[in-house]
Image 1 (cartoon, rainbow, N blue to C red):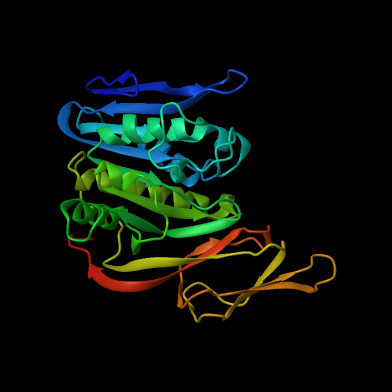
Image 2: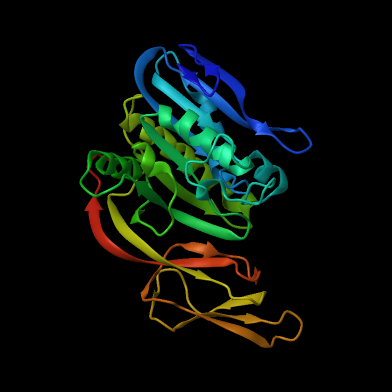
Length: 329
């Protein structure tokens, strides 16, 4: 099959760069694409990573998967994009460096738009739209830590929603968000999708490899669920919590040192103190951050105390259901 100008070959891996235009200095804005077609017919799975350039756990996880796939036994096609936002990776930013926009916040993009809009159009319409299922792996950065999966399938009960939830369960993180306030263009494509948010934090050399292994195992588990590779679903929990994430907590206009007064899993009431911002030189309280709503502090957010003005800090949500795994561990 032909993806973003590249032709897959049965039983082989094809690598190339898909072009989304050029910068003002005429440097190419490219997306690296790996096409791995199995020797047997089957579904098409797209795996994208690095949509936010500084989030690296997914990149390392998908590269791990690419190293040991047996294409002679694989069914279908794996489209792997280890770094979707190459300028963000280069400069260590969440946004696309060339125009300052967020890649998954510009809808489906435009082929004649800004750099980020052209990248989004390439990602959604020339790569993801060709797939039967999509895994878009995100993570924390050195400043943040995440550990849950977002299931993106549209209205509950639809075939796409059911499939997305199956994929989230197979991926293997116990907490699954079935509703969030963060919107992107994935639902417009009708492709069942999940966004695992895996790990991060400042101590990668001690704990990062476990995060990478979790991501790689999750990709393989979804491939097993789809029938692309053989073997049982591995390593997941026996019980899952389904979440409605509804509220962001962000810092105000004053940066400084964050002293948190709560911990992950706490239930916060409206107006309850989340933390205070301290002056880094004299310890004076500069600002107090309070919860804007009632909810449980989701297992995500900042893990480094130096915060900037306006920085996102955490999210609140509610558990709406608990479900069992429907396969043997």
